[in-house]
Image 1 (cartoon, each protein chain N blue to C red):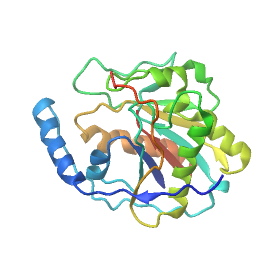
Image 2 (tube, chains in turn red, cyan):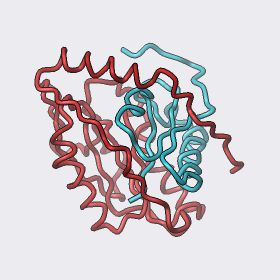
Image 3 (cartoon, rainbow over the protein chains, first blue to last red):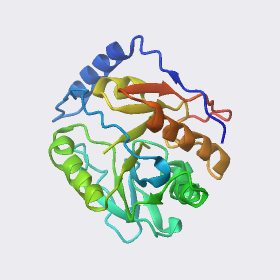
Length: 172
Length: 74
């Protein structure tokens, strides 16, 4: 595939919009607890992608039909995760999330969880291999504390155990 | 572990700081594009892979794709 031209995003005004959004969240969601990352968590890619094991991590509320759906009837959010095996049948995927329109994901899970595209990229040699496990999470979490303190290290541990080299993070 | 993310909300992504992000001007629920358009999904995926290969510092780019059949979000 030809190189895709990527330009840096014009960040003018984004910090002010984020600050306004945080004020909105604090006023509208009981128990919110905004945190700011340090911005120093940059890990370099050290081996070719054609030799790398790649995992998908989605916050689109993806889980299998026989797994417990995410809790969406609560303002507290849900900081649990679901392990999605690489050999899943995409028709078994469900999307439990009330803060975006899941109709595209229900028609074609690849819109938010591009498992078929990942396999095609491995087949073509662009990527080395697919992780044996991927991760489904639900992105509505007004309080990021359990995400940073519990969910993120837990998911990182699962991916490290699976010897994943690169993670593709996908929202809903 | 190197990561790259699609952003649907550039203000939030910018505010929380992530290592590599690509802003998709697509409706929520469609970060890789429209259902059953694998060629479109592959363009987005390839852009993410390029970002992984090329960024040597925290980098936030905009994808050069536009949504032709915009629909209202709920």
